[in-house]
Length: 354
Image (cartoon, rainbow, N blue to C red; front, side, top):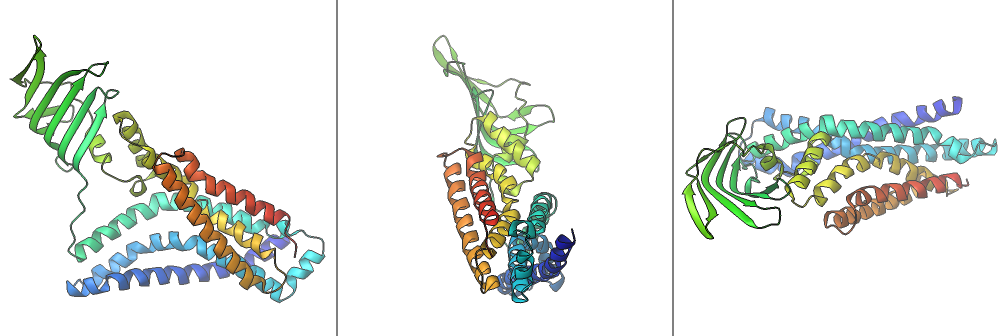
């Protein structure tokens, strides 16, 4: 415990300093990328600062893994430079035991990153983007058009030209009813449908259905059995990465129930859990690389762990792409790089020699 406290006392100040520097750097980069647009539209200084303020949680989320990597590599390098690392290893303490406190910090940081992203980062980053678009005179990107939703095991198909989420109305509605064998039963066409809290009310609606082997068209009478919740039309037009974990789960459920492609959304949902483990991954990579060198430990471990981290991100990007396209299961695409690098890192730490 004395050794763990000693390692943590060296690690924490470096981590705090690195986090502050990386967060500041990311905030300045974001500010300067938008500064020209802010000046062109004479954006108020207070609004600019507010946008930067809401970007701080996102920048900290991005900086956390790199700060952990830098702090662990610097701490090991500093101990090696003062020959303390050699003394500790020579006393019979294995390298994996020496760095146990770092691995615990990595696990705790991963747990923190998951809840921090879900509770703080997503809503603040959404607010930051809203302010930035307003200051840059940009319109909200429209994603509520040309929506297709299947319900009742695919026997009812909605085709909507535009969904107004504020007023809960469907514009340009076409609803096709099919039998259990996939045969055509009827089709409803309406200029607009309004949600009254229980079911959809159609305006200027007509129904096409078979009568004596002829397709007839009639004015649609008042019906109350179209009770699909409005949220399924809104969720089908958003990205799982922009939602909280609970909302992303509902999105995947809605897409499955509607018969729409859901692999990409499900991969993003699983990725929300797996990506939080990046903090643990970079810690493992940093200390495992630090245990492979006897000279210039800080420089070499930082360089090699950065290279390994880049390889990890590339592998993760490829696996997520394959999961989104349906070549592999979404859960495999999200978790395979994490599991692979965790095993490799633990093996390297276990057999590290200094």
